[in-house]
Length: 557
Image 1 (tube, rainbow, N blue to C red):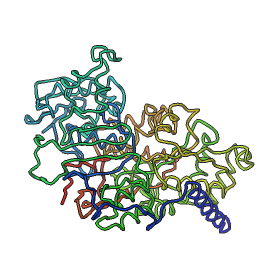
Image 2 (cartoon, rainbow, N blue to C red):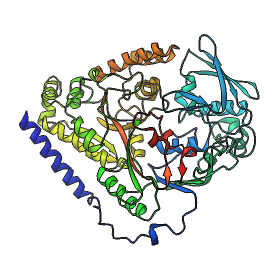
Image 3 (cartoon, helix red, strand yellow):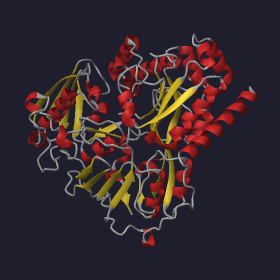
């Protein structure tokens, strides 16, 4: 076995070297010969601005988008009834209070009376109803989170009532993803030829580049090809007295490669990097005066989704062989530094996460070979006549490429051939639409929509999410669906968490996913220019997807 591990190390080194050469390599520190602007400053930079890079494209309509760039836009342009805290609880936002009936099938929310939209008009219960009805009618974005909503009723101007199909103790948590739009503004900008009857296109075309929110920022310019510029709403209804030095202008830049990042940082044109850069790039960027490197737990998990409906990953023994063939130590120390080894489907630290001993998958080539020999595809796989397809996201940067190469090398060490393909995320979403076009293995960086067990399990493993990037496993398991639904309907939190833990144990046994690591989100930022709450909160804070990028709480020095 020592010989096999040596072969694995050699294969990984060679494949990484070949890949980096084929890509032209990465600029090393000191190789950037471009001249920075005088004094390291951008001449035309706007005062009070914050500039960051992120994955692209961005769909800023909260009825449409649900990935990282989309969510960052949503949570800064729009308000929600509740707001997530880093301890996993939720606090009031547009709703100052709420109560549920004894069966938790009816929830009544009481709105604050001073909230107003960017137009200056008040936020009302009718706007909440419109936003929920719009989301469910369109069926995109986060609509799947609200499939339990049977009816939304306006009780009075500042009171809204949700009636559920089944009991749920998690609705206040889930409502952090119902972004409230102003009905009057949306209806003013509908395309009457749209597919939603009297609502036309529900304002989708206009909301591609505009907002109708009440959040702390509003859209100045949306360029679908590369950037979003948001400006502070100076008369925001919650005010700015607690943090008067919050950014006045926030600019999201897409499609920024590693070399450009280095140049932009040296020119003071970029304040926060994306979290998709390699360790080498981040170390280089962090070496620039005033920049600091952050590696912090963020609720993200790196998943390798295995298509359970196509050969050879339809066989549980081969899936387990793949899980044992991954070198988890290398993943969490070298590829995603300071990350932790996973415990299963729910990120470690959450109340309903498994313990380390509940997850048997460690790097063990002996076990990998033993599982492989039990596969009906053993002869085809070891003869090379059957090849495993693996796709990673090209926007995920070299860390994803390195993880793909590591998986490839692990499989090679047990005699299995794996072909790697890098694709833009948009293409991966297209591939995910059918079983036949979904690869054997696909990389998914997952972060929960809300910090509760159902947010980890339903989007990833319930049949309702099949055909989307969130579930490229294609489990289509009616019994599992029912278990997830029953667990989410449990009102008592401790009982609900116990049910989630049982489901996680079942999923670990099924092995539809290789949980590669709980990701320490790594990025560099201009620490001499700003204070970031999530950095100060430390490693133990757990943020819902991208809520660590709520810019009203950032402070410019």
